[in-house]
Length: 227
Image 1 (cartoon, rainbow, N blue to C red):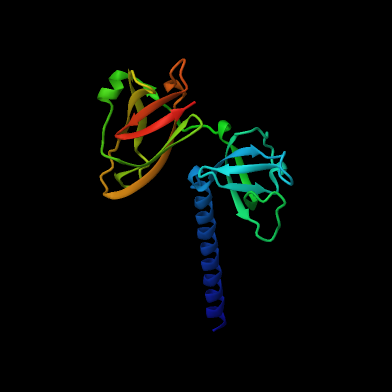
Image 2 (image 1 turned 120 degrees about the horizontal axis):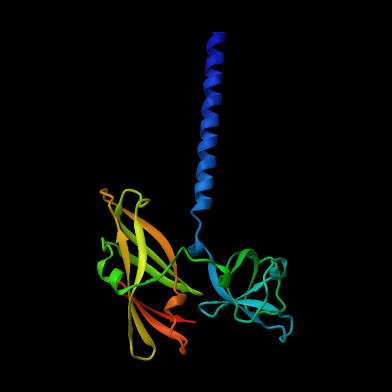
């Protein structure tokens, strides 16, 4: 009986170690899968001239947040600077400014310093001849000079997919000017699971000299790029 207890105790210890390893790996995967879509978007606004006010954050819907710890971050404070951030609401504190919700920032990033995954390709030949396997675009946004695309397609895990953004090289004369692009997907996976992915492209090369905006037509989607 004593021998059986020892064996049972050893098996239990082994099981606990295995569970701990699995939980650790899951935690790492969650961290690795964090992307910019998990962050709020906004702009810095300087309201120092108002009683009790300082720098605030204006969200895309024009609502306002009052951060209590903005100066704690290594971030140059510039009017209308675009930022990505995570925060928690502080209902336990009172505000003298009273223009928005009081918050404590957890993370903050300068959008202008974010890097894109790839660069756009400008090539009439590739636009015509690059792979065109089926996919669906579910969201398209622009952050600074990055075009962010969320898309999905059938496959096993999507790890072998080859994706690129190609501009046709043609510029339509209008105001604003218009460019036509397509997302090229090379997908050789035979599974039928629907896989979703996010990718971003540096689109600075699509800027029109002498203008400050251009309409981008991307695989049936339309978005205005202002720079």
